[in-house]
Amino acid sequence: MTDVLKKTLFFFESLTVPELTPYVHRKMLKDYSLPQVEEKVNLCLSQHPCFSQDKDNWHLNLEGLRENDQFYSLLLKKGQPQNLRELTKRANNRKRKTKSLLAEEVLLISDGRLVQLDNGYWGLTEWAVEANHYSLKHLLVKAMKMHPGGLSIQQIQDVINSWRSTETKTIEGVLRKFPYFELVGEEVWSYNPTAHLLYEHILRRFLNLIGKQKLRWRQDRSRWKDKIESMQSSLREAVSGQREVAAALAEKMELAGQHDYLLTQMAEKDLLLSLRKREILRYREHIKKLESKSNCILYQCRLWVKKARDTQEDLVKMKVLLLKNQNSQEALFIKLQQYKGKDRENKSNLRELKENHATKVAELQTEIVELKQKLERERAAALLEERRMMEEISKLSSDLKKVLRAEEEHQRAQFMAKQELAATKDGFKVLEEKLKNPLVKLIISISSLFKRRYPRKPV
Image 1 (tube, rainbow, N blue to C red):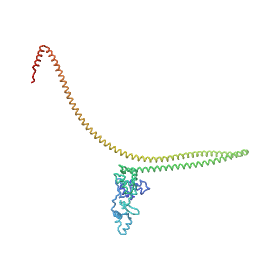
Image 2: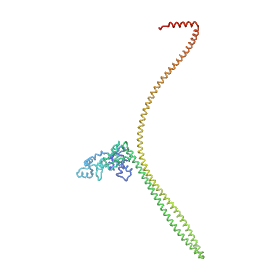
Image 3: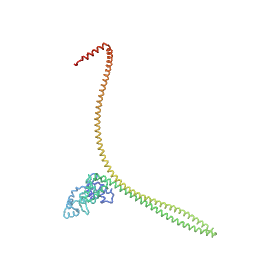
Image 4: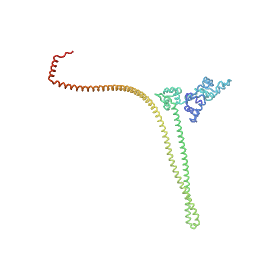
C-alpha cells in the first residue's frame, strides 16, 4: 500500500484521503469496502514519514533520507532497478561493511524517492509511475490541477498526449460526462475539487441505496418462496385428506352392502332375529360411528378444499403482485434514468442561470452607480434651484414691500390731490362768480388785446 500511495502522490502531487481511496481500492484490498480502505490509507499515511500533510491534502516528500543517498545515487548511475540482496552479497564478498554501503530495507520503505518492485528489486518512484494505468478521468484531473486557471480542449489534448495518445472526442465526452469539470468560458474547462467530492459522496450513497434495495428484493423473494412452499405443503395435506375421505366412503359403501345382505338374511330367517338382535344393534352403533366419522372427514375435506382454493387464489394474487412489483421496479428504474437526465439538464440550466445572474447583477450595479450619480447631480441642481428661488423670493418680497409702500404714498398723494381739487373747484366757483361782473369782463378783454398786440419776448 505504501508503494501504491507513493506512485499515486508522485503523479498527482497532492490529494486528500477520500481522493486517494479509489486508486488504492483499484490496485488492492478489493474485498474491503471503501470506508475500510479509507481507514487503512489514513493509517498508512500517518505511519510513514515520507508523507506530509498540508491541511487536508497529502504530499510525497521527495527529499528522502540521508542514509539512502548512496543507494539513490547508485540507482541513478545504473539507470535500472537493483536487487538489495544481491548488492549485499557482493558487498560481503568484497569484505566491506554493508551498513556503510546500503541502507536498511525499513529506511528504504520510508523514503519517498524509492519504490519496491517485484522479486526484491528496488527502483525510483518516477520509474514505477505509468500513466497508462490511470483512466482518462484521472489524467484530466491531473492536467486541470497542473493548470488551475483552466484549459481549452486542444491544450488538454496536448497535455494528455505527453502521457498517452487520446482523441479530442473522447476527452470532450469525459469532460461533459462528469459535473466537476466546469466550462468557465468559451471552450475553457476547469476542475472543481469540492464538486468532485460531492459527486463521489452522492454516487456512494446511490450505490448503497441500490444495494439495500437489492437486499430488500431478495428478502421479499425468499419470503414469497417460503410462503409458496408452505401453501404447497398444505395442498399436499388436503390431497391426502381427500384420499382418506375416498377410502372412508368406500368402506361405508361396503358396510351398506353388508347391511343390505343382513336385512335379506333377516327376512329369510325371522327365527334368528331374536338371537342376532344384539349383533345388529352393535353393527348399527358401529355404522353410526362410521357415519359420524365419515361426516367429520368430509367436513375436514371440504375445509381443506376451501383452504386449497384460497391458497390458489392467494398464489394468483401473489403472482399478480409480483408482476406489479417487477413492473414498478422497471418503472422506477426508468424514472431514475429520467431523473438523472433531468438532473443534468437542471445543472446545465443552473450554470446558465448563474451566468445570467452574474451578468444581470453587473448590469444592475452599473445602473445603480449611474442612478446614484444622476441622483447626486439632480440633488445638486435642486439645491442650486432652491437657492435661486429663495433669492428670487427674497427679492420679490423686498420689491413687494417697496410697491406696497409706493402704493400707500400714491394713495396718500391721491387723497391730497382730491382735497386740492376740491379746494380749486371751490376757488374756481368763487372766481366764476367774480368774473360775472361786467367791469371785470371788460378789463379781461382789454388785457387780452394787449397780450396779443404786445406779446412777451422770451428772456
